[in-house]
Image (cartoon, rainbow, N blue to C red; front, side, top):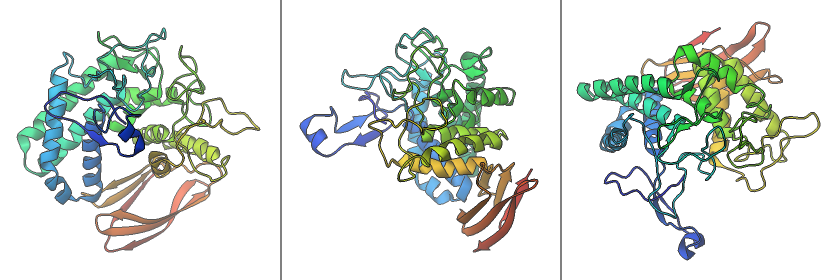
Length: 390
């Protein structure tokens, strides 16, 4: 993900481009600063990693970097009267939209008009929430209590504002974004689904949002579309306005599992598994078109989709993780399976080398009459506690 050059004294992210296109100016950047979501996602990844492994050494080594990242988030959110992380390009050659949906027409209002920057995306605020919560936990473990309390309080306040400003009660969904005037983009999109896995969604709203994500206008039975088929700019052949992205679906499925809906996560996994079975190499592409599923045809390929692509490959593991309701707690040494739901047609799963701390675990999961059960567990390097919740 790339975006325009920022003139902020604290830079959030940079990407180096090499090769003929950069050298000849075919793309207008070699070193390119931007991407509004890269900074909170860096913090989210680090805190998820430490929570799973219990490895504080890496977090300690990166602590100056994490403080710089938090400083950038605090500076940017303080410049917005509602405390949101927003973006706006600073050069004519930069990207107009700087979230993961970076097409020029990806962020729009209910009537189809494009949102005017600065723009605060729903899922970006969710990433900030998760980053603050994770960093508060890390700070406590390092004994930095004032920082921990400040970041936890900021996360809680953000959750309340987000619920008030983004939630569309009549739609059971979050708005796509807020525009320059803090006017919500009242469009049903997959962005709302990504908010689930971060925990910013309140329990009282979660099941409503999960049900909304699998309605037929959003769920085409090959996966969850980026935009509802009822939206003004819906186009199943577009890059971000109606297509299906595996990585997007995987993050949404993880959110389903977070709130106990592993059966819905399994539904998404099954849809993407079926999609892979229609390809010659059984490989998920970057994206495919969002046409509704028919009996005799697979999903329509997106002509210039990257294949292979790293985050599509990684989505396979995350989808399985979600369907199994799997969580690993490196601090307590526990592996939890919460309401496992195997996709139709899969009766047995073998997991090899699942690591927690220095312990590696092999598992065999079978479908039984009462649902999925763990039939065999082998551990190497120590003991772990395995908890199965039905």
